[in-house]
Length: 232
Image (tube, rainbow, N blue to C red; front, side, top):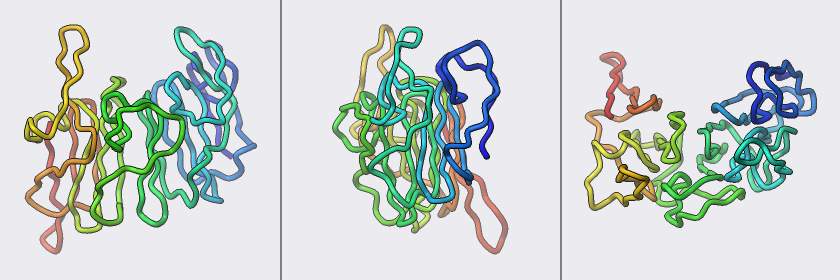
């Protein structure tokens, strides 16, 4: 059984908003994987469903989430199953969007999309899982940035070992040609982002990827031993 505790301003532990909660979430059944942002949570249960709860101002919990007023936005504190995805292997979330990797190697994302977060090129935010476009082959690894910014990036490794990323922030801006990026202006920030996946040129094929606050690293290597490449 999944158990959550701690700050609960947005219902992210699975109970109505309060300063602190400790909650057992029996309704999900046995859970095999979970990921959290600062304001919402998603989990994959043993029948490969994904459930989400917490802040839902941008649809990051999914369309089943009955959003209630919560601070300056909306939240869905009761866990709800996300429709439109099945056979989920892994879920990864930022504070504004969520993504899953399915057993057949597809990636679908939902939530905020004005900075290319969903990787479909539309720029339209949606609570409906939307398949990422332009990935050449099945995906074997997935991670989502947790920097708390709207432009939180997503990166994947495909079966060839190539790494692709989309969304915003320095994970892309330092390694992507400017003509492959678009720009949103937020105050004094001219924030660049990639609306669809772009290839990250690495010296070796990768098998895993991880995104930090403003950088990312990929793990590769072979018989000579593991090799880690980082950028940002």
